[in-house]
Image 1: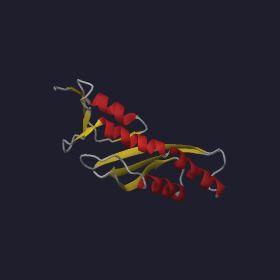
Image 2: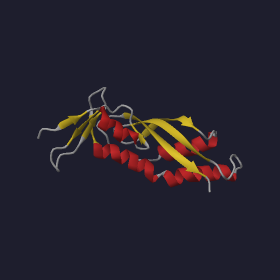
Image 3: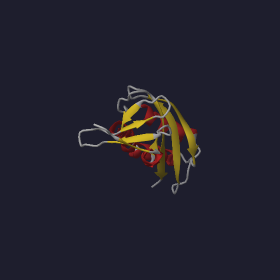
Image 4: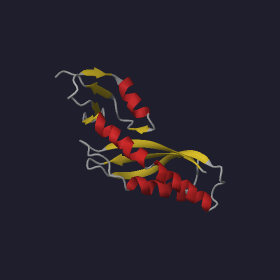
Length: 146
């Protein structure tokens, strides 16, 4: 079936939710319920299903409570006051077999090597959906100490 191509606007909406790949440039919407939407990375032309890309964000979302515990542990170590809150954005690559690598803190309002190492270790253990090809990704965790 013939699919309609939407411009960068639709791809930008996908990437704007808490995380997402900065490499997405075009989205193809399905014309029937059985057709799966796909997203191109724009460089290699590899098409990825929107379901797989959403699965990446869902996997990261499920780890939010574990990431929050990283801040609680930092507060327990007296690295931060009990009223601390902030954000940490990670950048990494996801291989075709769903493993994250080259995980780095891109930006953080909470400066702590131990906090960063804790959150990175969580992302390293995630098994992401299989992809057509590896891709770069970014994701932001928000923290609030209790």
